[in-house]
Image (cartoon, rainbow, N blue to C red):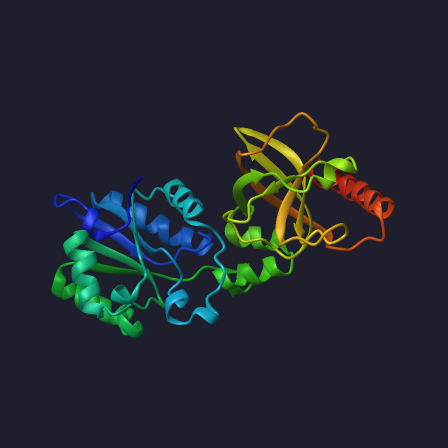
Length: 308
């Protein structure tokens, strides 16, 4: 997949394209339906399937206090879009200049002049341009004037409600990783580098791999989860703990992973992916090591039962 971070990076002979535009945070079932339509129509019309996205949620600039934490990071998004068949990804910096573009300026400068768009595919609630002034109807009007067609893809419903990033985030905040995974169309993950920690787990017989706090992938509510750890093409049965580890010494919120029945793994300074399969219990502070060890052993029994 070709990636560009500015329209200035796009070559003059780029050619013609089919384009969709959005945050694509999560690349969930709704996004996947839109992307499938993009790839199919692009192939049938000999166009390059292009996604235009942004380096941050618009609220991070326009209303920082209300900006939601992203479900996935930029590298995760790039990987998922490539898996969906997208051939070109343009990630625009959402700054004051971009936010100030009128719908006409956005359509002409980015869609037509930079990307040679002949088809633009969007959701029914699509807004664009300064102040969200552009709508699907105005996009159609601009398309008629500038030479591109517009296709609208409806929302995907699941269990009687539309699939959305905010709905998935709310589920993760409740620890409902199974339900969140159904809306994502895959298990939710966190990816990052394993770093050295306090090594308390090793001292009590349960060594853990601590993931860097700049990892990509929204951390669900504090608690213990059954999951998988992926490293260098291998998959390991794992107990995941999200929280501040306050039984011994409160630390900034993090995720740590205990790989079951393996003491020989050296994961330090490696990029790994943690996959959430199911929720086991909420985070808790224990009175001492004996209580903690007893509970960890219970947790590991449940992990084995869940993961088989």
